[in-house]
Length: 460
Image (cartoon, rainbow, N blue to C red):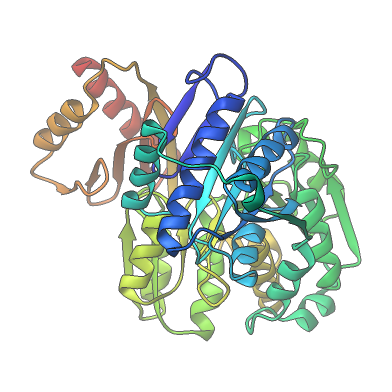
């Protein structure tokens, strides 16, 4: 059993003893701590909190505990039920709520669930806010409401509101998409994307929608992270189905992978690259991705005469860097699109609508559009950790060894070489060191990654 307490939320496996997994007692404790923080932050006791969840098996159980705990803290709860992460973020601002909790373990397997915590802007908490909640939880420093002050619960559905929000974006051209007469496939890995994505495509006027794993049962049809090795069957369906473009989302619909009409991967790193290319062609401005994302975004940004900057890994860090640089588009190389004209959160619905507009106006096939972008290849690897390993010491030694190269240490250690780079960092959500390497061929990227793995293992 695993329970990971971090500034970005509380993530764990369902079951086990309290403190060892995401047990009902742990859910109550961290929900009450969050409510206490939100009350203090809003400087009032009667606050409003939005709760949404993905479709994983434990979702209903976790949601019932979270909603009841918030009510027990005297909160008004707006329970939006099955809803994507970006839908929940939008609901917070629409409700003028004081915060929100999203019940999703994102791309983790079915035994996991998590409480992802939002502020009143519908954005993830920063480090100081997250640390305060962990402090309140550890001290159990919260007071439940008296019987006359218990909170209330209302239930709403925000999926249609979210879709309309996407349709209203200036750069989403519904008529261009209709005119293109696309056939579109969507693999929603049996979670809430199976509700939101087909509804979005219908609203965009797409007549032929091939639904793959769209029943939101929570029984994931394949490993839920939208990586090529998990999408072999999906790619074959698209290749053999006369489909113009295929989309794949993770369980909470904040990551978007694209599959070409021939069944090949557009590459999740290039979701952001393509959408940024389209946005920059209409809206001059800067771009941002994280330190583990492809150089291709930098190349496309500079092609448009604009500036690129890299932020630390993590949505909240990318958003902060976007605000700092006045970026018009940004995100992460895992298929996460952050479009400030919509809202400051990763959103697969926004990404799909902008991409379809771009594809329609390009007049190209999906695979041909991909070929218009520079080729880079990323090798993504990891080293499993045990608690006694001195990760910081290992990363410091790697930094010292490559001090003659361009080294960035704001988030782990990133080493930029002339034609490649490698990023070494401890994961915020798993007991691993991530090793991402990029080069002009996958062979070179794999070789660089393996070199770094071997060097770090020699230090363990």
